[in-house]
Image 1 (cartoon, rainbow, N blue to C red):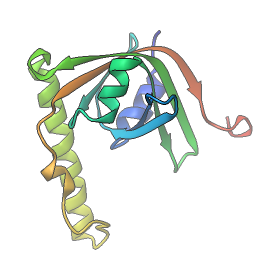
Image 2 (image 1 turned 30 degrees about the horizontal axis):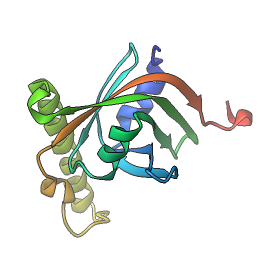
Image 3 (image 1 turned 60 degrees about the vertical axis):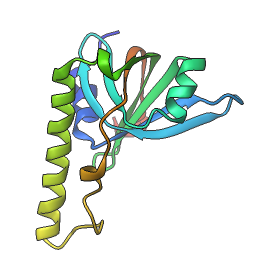
Length: 152
């Protein structure tokens, strides 16, 4: 399924998105993940830094959704689809470099906020993130517009 430009723009502008998977007891599990790359053809790449609950859930049930909102414009989207996991040695080095670039931009953003006296966190947590262990590749098969109807 093709991802419209405005949807991709909203997701890539966020520092993270909320990923939802299905837990072993059938309940939803939500986690924050950074999106590395989105392809217009309907593929989304996310890095799994810890290979924890999200990875275990996807091994059992590959259905997943990703949600992002732009609180300033009261808009958001949920992408639904089927995910697959790729191990670190299967990752395209260009995706790792893209992730490093995004982390550098996030750290730069925090430093600028700190200089302005707006820094909300006493440290730069992005600098402490581990090397990614797995890549999550989502094949999007549905897009839900979360923007309230009267605001479209």
